Amino acid sequence: MVTKRWVHKELPDEDIISELCDKINVSKPIATILGQRGIQDFESAKSFFRPILDMLHDPFLMKDMDLAVARIKKAFETDEKILVYGDYDVDGTTSVALLYGFINSFHYNSAFYIPDRYKEGYGISRQGIDWAKENGYSLIVALDCGIKSNELIDYANSLCIDFIICDHHRPGDHLPKAVAVLDPKRADCNYPFKELPGCGIGFKLIQALAASMPSIKINPYDFLDLVVVAIASDIVPIVGENRVLAHFGIKRLSSAPRPGLKALLHLAGVKKTITITGIVFGLAPRINAAGRISHAKGAVDLLLAETEDEAYHFADKLNLKNEKRRDVDAHITEEALAMIDGNETLRNSKTTVLFKEDWHKGVIGIVASRCIEKHYRPTIILTQTDNKATGSARSVFGFDVYEAIDACSDLLEQFGGHKYAAGLTMSLDKLEAFQLKFEKVVSESIPDELLIPQIEIDTEIELQNISKKFYNILQQMEPFGPQNMPPVFFADNLFLASSLNVIKEKHLKFTVKQEGSKAAFDCIGFGLGHIAEQMSNDISFKMAFTIEENEFRGRKSLQFNIKDIKFD
Image (cartoon, rainbow, N blue to C red):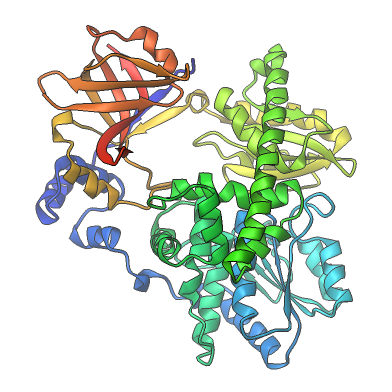
């Protein structure tokens, strides 16, 4: 059983809590949660609870946006062939569907290109550039990739092919020599919000194009269903501009989704209120499955489908690929965990770096995440591709795995990514040296507490203060996601109000009450069945939990989703 750290968030100043309670008429726990999230007065609360599209930033605040728009307009005016190029994951395929869908509505001399994960690898490829040259494309707009493809952009320039890069990954020391590089993370970009996904950068581009070309009657906001799928799937912070885009994207996804997303929602069984979590677990794996198992073109075809019949045709194919993906990643995860459990050095390390030459490249990122669930530490899973070791890295909360990989860059041929997820490629003969150096770098920089899973607790609450009205206010804090997670509450002096049930030998279910209160709530603890043996009717306990609504046989009631239980 993995012990978890309970980390209590710092409480806001009492004056802030009092002002929020008074000005927006909320309870102290709600005011506390808002204050912790930087909402400290009426105006900021109004913006948080009632986002409007006017809150979106002017796209021309982004460095090089004027250059990108001018180059694309020139291509429109001269009927130049434009190639929309994107990565094979959810962010990349939604980005391509967004920009290609926008451009192809009025400029028919355009196409899209997704690299083959297995033949070309991540990002811009020489094969892709050669294909563009052979087919007469003189402008490539790359989305969700390209920020570190300096040599390949130089190659494209030598062929008289211009590039516009729309990326959100960290740049290297030198930017590629493209016509325009749109990336809020570049050091000289003063764009106010730095955490857009690649599809978000694409959205800002079509916003700018639409503003510059009044004759175009296509509304960029019609593409927000794609943007929210990217925001959810790429695990970017849901604050600032992302929160506004996600709010309106979910509205679009709920009321008027494009046929492809509507078909996926149906196949994923997402019938109730659409949430970020529903997108992450329902839509993202199915879209990703195309590029993991075969070619991601199938995902873009689905997202561009114009009729429901066409959409269901492509969606059924993706669903089958997702089922195959599940089988493959379950098998590889089993092998990976066995490698760790059977090796004392690996069990005692502060990192996990595993390699097996025949592991499926398309699922190794998922396998890295699965390994972290059991062995909580920065993890890299590698396989062999074209006589190279190619891998995916995942991190634990609070640790920047990208920086750790960067510190080992002398052993790598290529790498890129984010704080919590990255990709890398190295020569096979450098593998052992990399394993040793990565372990050394992480061991010297990671605090011991980051190797223990944490539960971040917002505030303490009395059960008697939890009501349907209270829950309704919590719901208005959605969309939830990174940096705006569902509030986690803590309650003490709790007792069982019913017998314990362990469902399927692993899930905990019971009703809870609190000393001195008549209030009682049903509780569900997924994967917490092992705690049952410690619980009895005469033992009090503390519990960390979120509040959710459960519907059973048409009856709705509040229930607690247990995060952890501790005993006095």
